[in-house]
Length: 166
Image 1 (cartoon, one colour):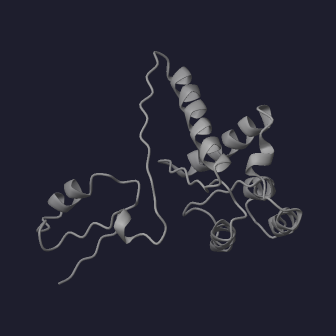
Image 2 (cartoon, rainbow, N blue to C red):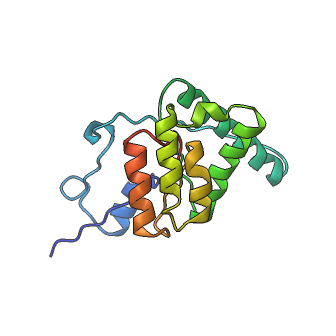
Image 3 (cartoon, rainbow, N blue to C red):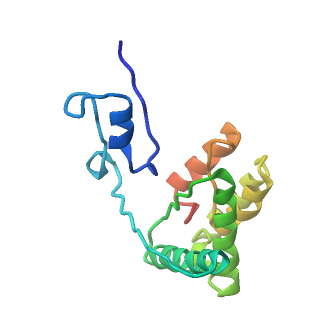
């Protein structure tokens, strides 16, 4: 009997899972790292330490925004992985709010007026209201709890470069 278990890209303990399932690590475990990607992927791990959890979250948001802004400013697209669906929307909204507060919204918006107009028109087709509000500004969200139609549109627009961050 063949069992196939696919794990999320954000789950680093794939060996622990394989051991739990009694998988032979030399014959039955396949780990697809950056060498199997059509587009290079880089990951950054940053440790944030604060005495109070609210301060820690604010510090994390600041570092996240700075890293995302830096990469987008250099012409890259960025995906931020979080551990919960509701954190997806919160993080994207935080990024958009910080861009607005810092006067840096133009960095994230589609680079041409026609792309921005297309994103604005397409946002009217979305069921997810938060996504519809942020998409014209170059931000998106994507998680399994969204309607397939909305996820497809986000995937298409990210692939076409309309979205800078998600």
